[in-house]
Image (cartoon, rainbow, N blue to C red; front, side):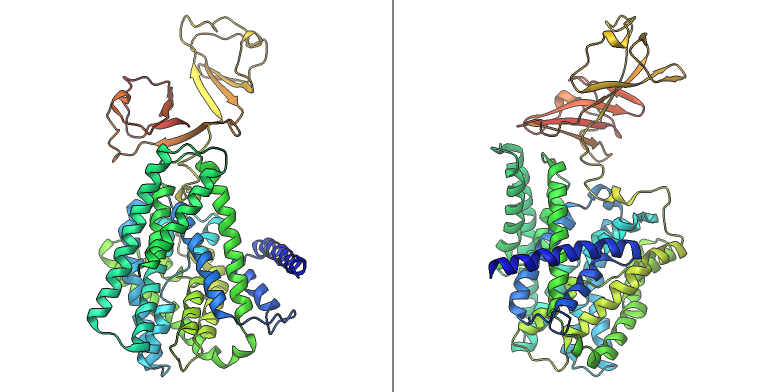
Length: 533
């Protein structure tokens, strides 16, 4: 039995990987392929695997969303997002609520749903999908003007908690009724515990990271996994919003000074990709295509309303005070992709004691199919038509694994007068093991040196060294000194660094400095730090 299950699991994973490659070639979001694959294996598909355990699906989906949201925060470059942070938070909070209310009123007055049931449908669909937005922006390498890519990433990564809160409040109201005071208390607990544990666990983890010495490679990764689990579970047990907590913790760790981030990023990238495959496949497996024709008309009506009216109204109203171009607001409106989180929240409505007159699960499922397939596929086209693509930019800079932590591979320095290397041929030099001299600039002339090249005072040399991967206790990282960093204008000797940290190189414009205690740091300096255990 176990062998059969593992064989089936291997086949599914291989199929997901194959579909992923195919989706890239066809220009279709990869997550849509996983959803269709689940439908293909499901009760109404070719494999006809009977699966309707919504409670089990809810538990697995929650774990998957936990890691997706943690990595969404971990991978967000807060320095790049800071200029649009307020707009992003306004959209993720008030924007989610306004979109949900407008959609709920449409469901009530136009489609004839009961008011609370219509609002519940709007709440379930209120958030945009971080996984879909991240995958499209990264796969297409879409750098957008006016920091729009960062705005979309932060908004889509942080609005699921608000949709979750609205869903929880409405389910409580429909089940047993709820007073305004109880609503305020529920929201206060959700936000209070979510914020407190998000910042508390994140800051505590950063503090421990600077002081703990992990016994062997890999234990720092296990530590971060435990931190992610704790940041969700602790507030959730107390009635708080675990999704909000885990997202905040991810932001703090991803933008903090932690060792070995270069190994954490690919690990969580792989885990999150696996979770996305599992989540979309499971939700596809849970669906019954034979039941969808009965709800296709209301689903299409809601999808069109949200795309053309609900989302644009919320975006234009809330972004108006911040300025920005009309083109930006149009693109942000169109980029409101619905995804797995909406289906997961729809599963909550199925397992709750609340009885609904409409099949909300399949309505939401069809809306997500429409959103990912049509909106997701057309997002690059819309960005081009609105002239919002920044051809000189790189969307990868909005992720912490692009700039904030990069192993040093090249070293440049100038030979001063009287240096021991002056007058020596390259073959006579004693270079560090694994290093090679790859370039020499002499005045305006750029040379590729060979063994017989004789060095002179004033020569600028570039050495290429092997990466330090596998070197125990060493982690070289690069940090950019921003204007708001208190270290700017301060002597290196007066700066309190993390335990075991050393600034080994400063790049200032075109110059490279080997610093000492009297070196005064300046805004824009690129600091190369070595962390040792």
